[in-house]
Length: 199
Image 1 (tube, rainbow, N blue to C red):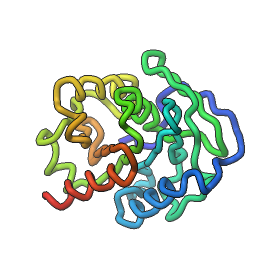
Image 2 (spheres, rainbow, N blue to C red):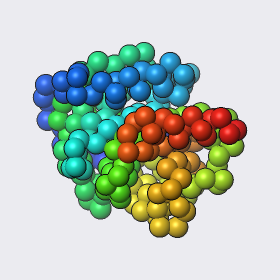
Image 3 (tube, rainbow, N blue to C red):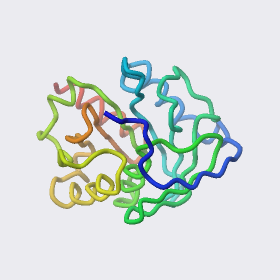
């Protein structure tokens, strides 16, 4: 497992944090998910999980920063704005106090696929993952996280596996990894809660 390792080319511009009032829901959801153990750190010190929210009608989004999963609460200084990305070129541009999460390209791919996607939650839970694997839209096992292939896999899941309606996917090549999304983070959270409640 190599969670937390950024695999894309990252052009990070150090900048002031986003105003707390503009990402209040994002901060609330991230800290809630951490308190539930769905974002955190494995015993080997490798972090897992992240959250993001789209900025307006653009494909820009704010996401929790890399190497922040161990922190119980995150302030605005632990978030980053992704300003541009290119899946084919494995490139991402971001600005903020910290670089963007290692899963940012996958988030970008989801925002690119559907304008209705406004918030994304990426969590880890071994029991839930085992129960949902291949019962919900599932990325192919040979595709590792944080790569252009995983980002492009999102397109296949929308086309072939009803992802637009389900709003939840399991990552076969990313142990324990589950992604939910919705028009808002509240909707993404409801999708996640429903999945937990059904297992």
